Each structure stands twice: as C-alpha cells, then as structure tokens.
Image (tube, rainbow, N blue to C red; front, side, top):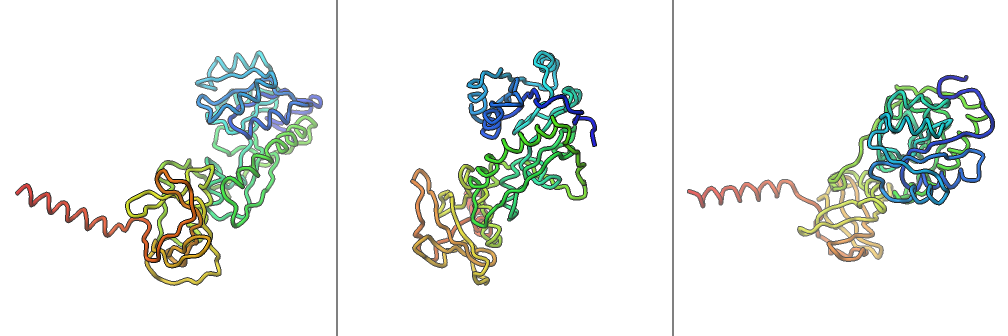
Amino acid sequence: MVGPGVARPQGKSLRVVLFGDGQWAADTVERLAPGPHRVVGVVLRVRPTDATLDDAARRAGIPVKQFANVNGDELRRWLDSVAPDINLSIAFDQIVRRPLLEAPPHGFLNIHAGKLPAYRGRNVVNWAIINGETEIGLTAHLMDEGIDTGDILLQRVLPIGWTDGYGDVLRRVTAAVPALVVETLDAIAAGTARRHPQDPAGATYFGGRQEGDEWLDWSEPSHRLHNKIRAITRPGPGARTTLEGDVAIIWQAFFDPAWPKYIATPGQVVGREQGGVLVKTGDSTLLVREVQLASRAPETPSWRVGTRLGVDIHTVVEQMARRMQRERGERS
C-alpha cells in the first residue's frame, strides 16, 4: 500500500532533516554519514539536554538550526531551501502540526521507544521497567497530529531482564535506533514500506515523570519496589526514602519472587547480609544493595535490624496534632 507520507520510490537515497536531541539522534547522524541517505539539516530542541547532537552534526558539516516554534513560517522557509525528502524526529519535544507534517514528499517520521500502540507518551523506558515488562518496543511510525498515534512502518522488540536497570535498557535502545532508521529509510526509498494503522483498543499513554515521583512507599509489594528502583537508577535520579530524618537514595536493590510472603512492619530492616540489608515491604522483603546518604559516597548499607525507613504517616499526623495543641495552648 502506498499512501500519504510513503510516496512512490524516487531513487535509492533520501534527503533527511533530523529534528532531535541526545545520543540517539547523534548516533543516527553518524550512522547516516556514509550514505546513501543524506542528512541535510538538523533542528535542535530549544533547550537541548546536552550538546551531543549539535557536536555530531557540526563534525559532519551539517547545518544546525533552532526554532522557538517549529510550526512557524521561519522554519518552513528554511525547509524549502534545503528541500528534504523526509523529516525525521528522534527525541524532539515540540508538537508538530500541519502543514509541516505533510511538507516533504515522504512526510514526517518519528522513532519512538515504545511498542505502539502501547506506551505512547514520555519517559517510556522508565515506565516499561516500572510496569515489569520483559521487553520494550522500538517503533518507526509516521507522525500525525496526535501523540504517537501515526501509522507504523517498522517495529522491533528488545529484551528487558529481571535485574536490568534504566541504564542497561537505555543503552540497548540507543544502540538499536540508528539501524532501525536506516532500515526504514531504505524501505521508503525502495517503495516497499507498508503503513500499519494503530489499533486504538490497545493504546496506553504515559505522562512525563516529575520531581517527587521517585519516593518509595514501603507498603507496596516487593516486585513493585524492585521495578521502581531499577527503573530510575543511574542515569536517573535514583529512588528515595528517609532514614532517621535524612534522605537516602537507593541505587540498587533485588527481589526474588520465591522469597516468603508475610505481614510485618513495612520499611523496617529485618535482616543483614553481606550484600546489603533486607527491608520489609507490603508483602515480602527487598534486599537493598546500594544507598547514598546526603553528601556521602554510595555504599552497601549495614543498618541494624529494627531500623525504619520511610515516613509513618500516622506518626506524622500525631506529631502535627500535638504541635498544634501546644501552639494553641501557648496563645491562650
């Protein structure tokens, strides 16, 4: 099937303008450098996360632009001057509207780290690990005016292991992006690309993670805590709890589903091992292996049995009530 955004073949090479950010996009620029497809321009985010893509483009002699509004006339005039066959988005953060979506002959291609139609939205690598997925999709799809809703051209699946952290999965995805881009562009140029509409019945959407989302609730089941900790470990912010009034970052933990399940006080240290400490959760235990307190270096915890992590909301409410009573008594 040939339709809008997948034009009939026009030779074996495509002129590409890449809209993007970060290592995924930088590696793609380097992968496309030998040809046959040619990156004729790069559009950076208004606030790039780093200079990786900018550096890669300039080393390759590719013009680099930034636009406060990518749907404005200034960008469209520039695109007319470089005449791309296709636009490509990799980790770009502005919502693209018509007529920019339909300006090049082959439309606007997006690379998304999610198994569309599931996992639309932001921070998908983190969310996939949090949800305990055993695989993550990598999808090349044509953009429309929705968020990750356009027709799929190619999709690949990468594994997520039980102990894989955010950095492990992110490196796996990053390494796979350039090959998917080349395969998709080759198919478009050859006229063999096929559009597959997404099934809205299978769609899920995830919003961006924000400051405060990293706090642990020790009353949750062990597998959820295990997944959350590894989902936001390095290069993420790290999962957080409290220890005697101080903030503790938990960088690494482990849970074996075969461990006993029983009721006790969530957040309490119930055992010590050479590789860390066992902390009671809502249903079982969690082996905390690496923590970081205040300005100290990361370390293996050796907290005594009985130590409590986290905030007991009932105690906090009681303390607030007593403080309010004291303040009322002082004013009377």
